[in-house]
Length: 472
Image 1 (cartoon, helix red, strand yellow):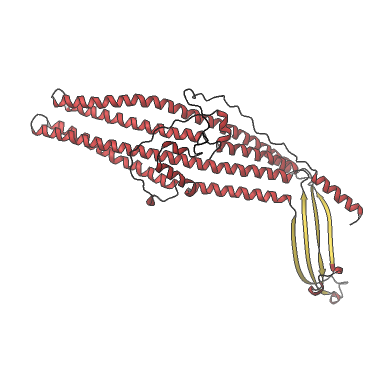
Image 2: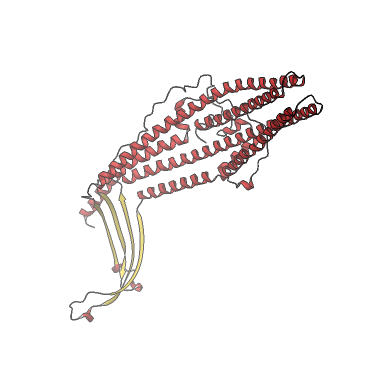
């Protein structure tokens, strides 16, 4: 290698090391966050609780069986495994992108036999036939002068981080769905107990009515009405089995089991709605995994603009090769048979019909789209929090009124029974009072179930447990 060629090589190497990345540097898109939630009045502010377990927000419901099921979700849920596999794919792509920083080395060993071109068309037999054996080692390295490789790594890094956030979002979603299904199943069990008590009371009322009919103080209509009321309550109790089996099957799927292999014993213990302290709205930007994933995708799209812009500049490749070539393996590795080459190469596309410009415009549009998606995800997060805060506030008031209605309805049943036994009212009054009381009790349970579901949805909307500094 001559001195002039060596100086050119050193100069290009220096330029490669001192190169700068083209394209815009990423800045997180600005979003407007309110100072406080609209529905935050009357709610307790979130406070640090370092001594409390972090991330296990479902423990606030105080149900050991729910805690055990939640632990199985991360291990056995198939959607979580899909998200985890996608995260590993993203890490592999990041590793492949980082490999561009390093040179590519390759080795070759070849043995050929052939005939060289003849000196003239009339003397083909004079063309020599011989062997050519070759042992070579080559290396090439693309200098990242314009930051194409660096921007590619930056994009894949952000994509991997987005995939990690997707994994956390899938886990949080599965955990929340499991909690909602489980709590609804326990509401179902509580309603089943209510109907069992109701059926027992109706059976007693029917027996009293039959005795009065046999004694001649009540008509057959009273017996028919009592039987109708009893059978209706029994049918409602049977119908609850449809919803319960479906909820049980849904829970089995969430913990990665076939419905035939999963069973939950009935338990009428109903959890209370936990006291959920609130933080400031800006915390959602850090704690919600879906928002974090959308922000990271915006960063990845921004880096791809730099990749597209770098295509307008020439690529600098430093390549070298060395080895041995001879007519036989026996004398292959010898100094006279050695060959080598070393030098830089510049390659640039002079005309492509506007393809690179179109690719750059596409990258810019993709970034604009990802920014809008990020901002929309943030707004949707605020909406989910406000929706469930208002739902819990309104349902709490409704529950208070409904409990009073249920208490009054139970009292009306007692009064109607006493009046019927005294002969001052017909049995229709008793039937109406019983139906109203059962309806009031079922409405109270329905409201309790909706409050529990809304509390889980609120915790999910907040990104999980407020005690954890980030999504778990």
